[in-house]
Amino acid sequence: MLSSRSNPKGVLTVRVIEAKGLKNEDTLGHNDPFVELWLNKEYKQKTSVQKNATEPNWDETFTFNIEEGSKDHKIYFKVLDKDKLDTEKIGDADFKFDSVFEGEPLDTWVKLPAHLGLSDHGEVHFQVSFQAE
Image (cartoon, rainbow, N blue to C red):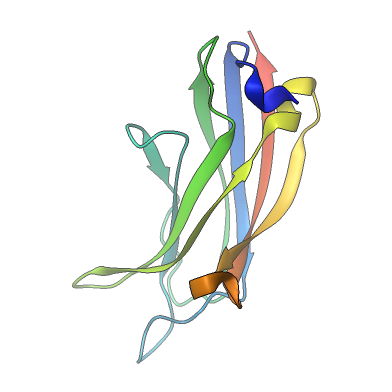
């Protein structure tokens, strides 16, 4: 299994496409969702805020430099609701992207599990690819 090996050097490209079924965190109105994503907490990136959207369409692309020998095999992300006074979490999750190191692009929907995983707070569509240097 590749996850026990280290990564080659290159660029990981992550496309945050859309979300559906997001739990509404606002008592009045709709969510203003955005996504924060990272491989490690020192370098977080985020999408734009989609106003009044329960099914946002971001279609935004992010890149992460992968150093040779890195053990990064998961993308962590959090979907947040931007309000005037604060930001509320809609949900968070992570997923493995090992297959992209073998040249297989990943196209996946990832669910945002609710407490105890009994239901979900929606899901987010990602595409991930890797270009070795």
